[in-house]
Image (cartoon, rainbow, N blue to C red):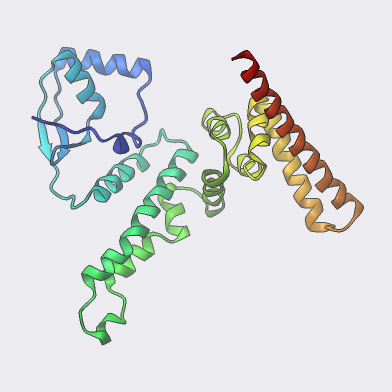
Length: 256
């Protein structure tokens, strides 16, 4: 049997820790693969870790088809919903998954309308119940509820996704910085974000605090000396970070 492992689907699966992988391997060797792997056509939907171990060690396994899916988007949504139900996910992980879910559902709205709207012009002006249902699922409140997060936290995660450098995202995942603080740091230039992340937890917290203080001054007294000083400090910090990044690049080129 040909089984296709989609790398796009694997992105939704958190890798097992070495301890978890060893425990699963021991279980499969001693008890066999008791639960069937779930397929959609030839695409593996559920059981990626078991499939990898069984294929490597020659352990027999069974498969079952899930016939409820109509498209790969349906598969993605199913996997996202499965993961959102897990308690082990961090707030950031749940927020990222919920936003991905919203993107998939948003893209499906035109197709839902086309498939469910009557041909008559008069009836076509009235949104279908299916359309209303999908739109209700992609509001900010519904997305936040799906992730079990506040709307403000979800907004911070969206900002992080749009602007944060990989080093900052890694710091969030490791617990070195909170989502709220990371959203502040994500507003800084790329070089400054990289420099703050390289400095560790203390440097990240300092960068987030400076952003908050600078914004507070600008909001209360945008044209005051304090406001101008705050903007000047932010510019100096940004230039310093950019200079440090350029020096690092030069050192790499020289060493090479």
